[in-house]
Image (cartoon, rainbow, N blue to C red; front, side, top):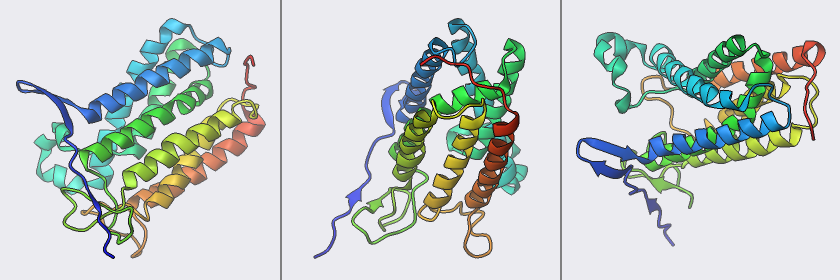
Length: 268
């Protein structure tokens, strides 16, 4: 008996307003940041995040700007530098795609550092807050990738395979949904379970980096690698190499902060 695979046919555009398009992808990120802002405010109520509630909007704005800049620069420099050297005007053509989560993470770290210095709060405290609220952005962002029919997985004969418009006639792993579940849901539950169990600021952020690196490394075995990069050592993708660096870096940060970090202040 042959398997009938689902054919992806979701329109990425919600509404056309003349030349302006309202897209699901953008809406997913808006929802993610709105939920993150809610969690930021709850962490202020618990005395975990020691800033005024009015500062939350500023934090969200800073994170969006730095995240986007980091994601774009990192993608250009690491994933597709040759193309952009030949087509420099496309550096600004973000509507064609080309964002890197690893670069977004660097941007978040930089944005968090900028916020901490301008508001006189520990950087590690800010990054813990971003980690606790940021998983929602990962979840909804990957759902947006799925709706767009992009970042699909490798071909598969299993029942879970989906035929994507740009992925050829063969069913592929919906790796965007794997990432949404692991990075956006499982990691979210893990961090909030650990919220009352860690004692130093920065440990939660370190666990986030380790957890994301581990989950992304696993999903990369199902995700289609970037065509211009392919495989390294005939087996690993660039994403996996960067994830190993994240896991090592996050682990070292956790050990250091467990001994030298600032003790957490919070209410139950």
